[in-house]
Length: 149
Image 1 (cartoon, rainbow, N blue to C red):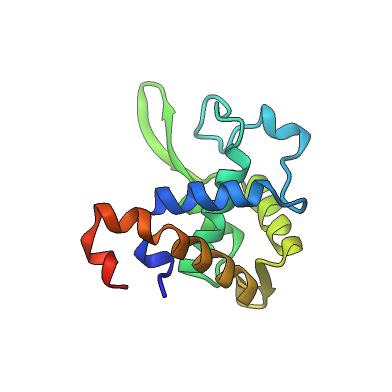
Image 2 (cartoon, helix red, strand yellow; image 1 turned 45 degrees about the horizontal axis):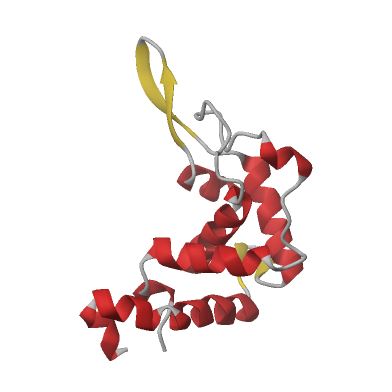
């Protein structure tokens, strides 16, 4: 069976984001249209579906790294902040965006909260592996090593 590790992240995230958009549990709040994704950003995202793309990316990240907490995920989605004539410095990503998406993924049943941190539930693992398996033929044409899985 093809898993998340066998498919390029950009293809998998787009596929999962499209499927998450159809769920009622995952929905962008009203403020998501003009909120930045961290203090290191100057403008909010231009893509209207950025909430679903971030949700798919977070689900994949929890699958790979799990169990993880919000602070560690904030570090992953952080970046360099331009400080003018001073040297750039690293800043973490938005905790509110990360937390709200994780809560929505918990409501959908794809993530479970444990004392060690959040991890992917069996339903979430099945969902991601199914998405990866459906992309296998698409990727197999461009990467021959995946065809044997």
